[in-house]
Image (tube, rainbow, N blue to C red; front, side, top):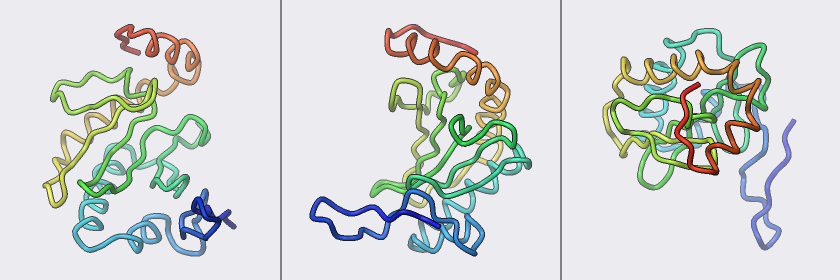
Length: 160
């Protein structure tokens, strides 16, 4: 079951809050995108799942999202989506992650995004490192999400 999102004029945009239907979430998400973007998404998905095979996966809020089985969707670990420029790997509490490659750009107070240009090769090992770091910091974020957000808004550098 899903709720469709209307555009500003009240027309159905085809987007949904949650749409996992009978298809696998990855298949459902890939079907929405062209071949180039679908290939990037599939490569990113494979890297994410190799880093942590136990993820629950769903399409929520226009993202292919990954959550820990005991973590709930409110505290998802990472998600991906496609923009005109390429594929984005988003980390809900990215402000807690080390960024040795300097690839994370700020989003909301705690969210950080790794942008991959259209058709770029996905470095499975590096993606795995970032996802692994996010999984390691999950409990800390769950227990301290308000504090992490407050510190991020105040510009305080953090490591969980």
